Length: 601
Image (tube, rainbow, N blue to C red):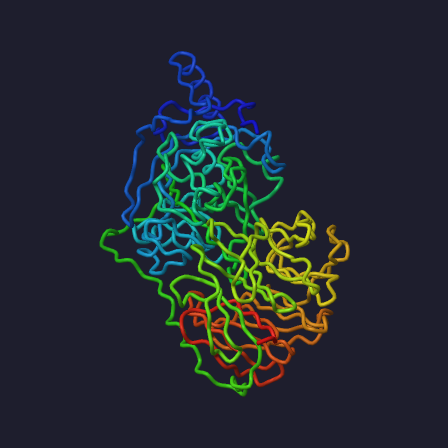
């Protein structure tokens, strides 16, 4: 793709002047810069070479921790004429502002908030699994600790751009900072081969976030602007906003459903790491169904705030730690199910050997056996209809692949790239997720085809109906996570039915007769409902979390995993579908998840 060099852009030669824009100032700025450019050869709008000299810019230290770099006011061409429809190039001017040199780390987030939401714990890595609301709460908290005026109203989530506290950067500020004078596809130019020198991305990231500041910075000394974690911006997202946005300090639409994310992440392709690429997400998404261990952020701050608050001794203020309540203990083994009477075999994921692997055990919980021993993590095991093979997801190379092995763990082999595979009733094909879309693969021929509309970019956990004619899949293309039923040959979605549920939900599983769907809500409870939306029934209760339910081989019970909180430990439990909501915990050792139950022993 071409860069945005088709339009003119200009930057001040000394990016430390805290100019504040109005239309007249912008005009004078452009004239002055053009004169300086002609006279002194300042060519800040040229694409940056692969190895740039980092400019020495003013830096301030946040009392809470971290450094912010002062970026001067300037104009640039935002967007990409060769990019997507929502990247319409347009001239933008931004006032001077400070921006975090590095993404907010887990160490800093924990210091300020008292908790670490990240999936992969490492103090030097960027904090992840953050909602937009988490990011703005963090900004407000740091502002309060330093005696500054918080920017956000936590009742309305509106940002006061006149306040002198910390906030998220606007989308325009973020792109301006990432470009650092470049008009190419990336902050260093157009050469995609150079990207791994500046970014942790797929496949170089080894399938996870990496400590911040290890790659080369851009021209303005900002690290990890490409890759590692997506970075929240303050703006609401709109596909058409660029076509009529303000020319000076655009703050995004006044309302919307999703907030903007920029920069790409550890699991992104070079395309999604482009400087103009716009991602979006719900500001208070839940990861109960889809984990988001690639969402982080960095702070921004006005260089010339028009409103501030005074604090007698802000440095003496101690952080107010937001601690989660003590998680409830996992309820004791109880209920009317007698484990000794259970028949069949359960396959599941467990970390009892030190890392997540595939195991099997008798339905009673006895005779546990480890099946996989590869270097990467393994999960999502599913018995074939005849019980002779097991489909599972592995992260051997850091990114998900679907593998197949015999029931005893022998003869493992690669099937395809992707995850969350589930069998067709005849055992001849599978439905799975790859790049957030749903595909069916014929095992004999290797032929794959998309079975959902292309616009459904946010899908997960698909399953076949008992007759093999339909699939149920969770998707977020309409807003909250919901379950949709569609024909296996209805990739245009013309006959799609949205399952009627009271709460956002995911992980659909069909009943044996195809008349009901078992699912989990984003609040962490298991429900069952008719495919017509009738006869809804909540099957599990409690303050803990219940996930990933499957029916027993005879359909009279459900097997699922539950934990005191999202960090576990998870234990596999069983209870009757039409019982009294009492359950029995089958496992006790380690953390055990994603069970599947077959009648053969």
